[in-house]
Image 1 (tube, rainbow, N blue to C red):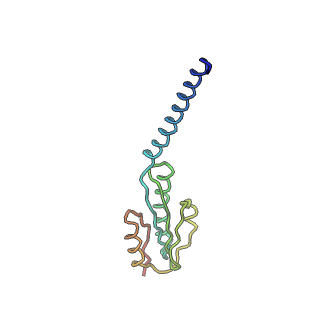
Image 2 (cartoon, rainbow, N blue to C red):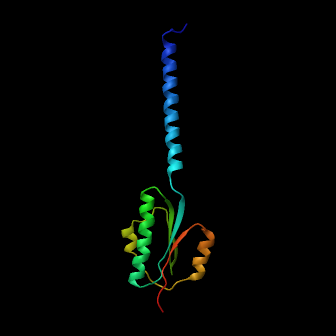
Image 3 (cartoon, helix red, strand yellow):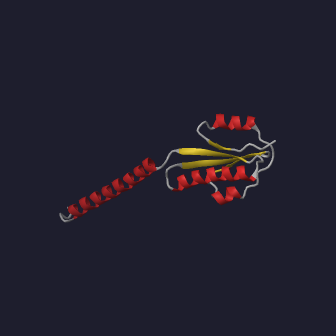
Length: 130
């Protein structure tokens, strides 16, 4: 026969276990709900004037700050250059983007292809002066 004092202990452990599971489930649920919408950021590294590149990096900085404030989640950053595309799973810091060297010619066809592939993407580009 089981000890009658053991049943209350078992119930207590069950209640505590269920309470912790509910607590963890609520935390995970809130994290999903409070997380901002996901977005892909495309950075066109085609050559542009320094002032235009600064405007592009300022736009990225604003998106990055929104992601840090959990108003937006940057799912992926894609760097587009003459050498092709480079997908970054971890968003670079604004300083890392500022340090990138814009070079090459713009490729509107590649930008359109990426826009079709990622319709919700935020495309950051500047036009090179002729």
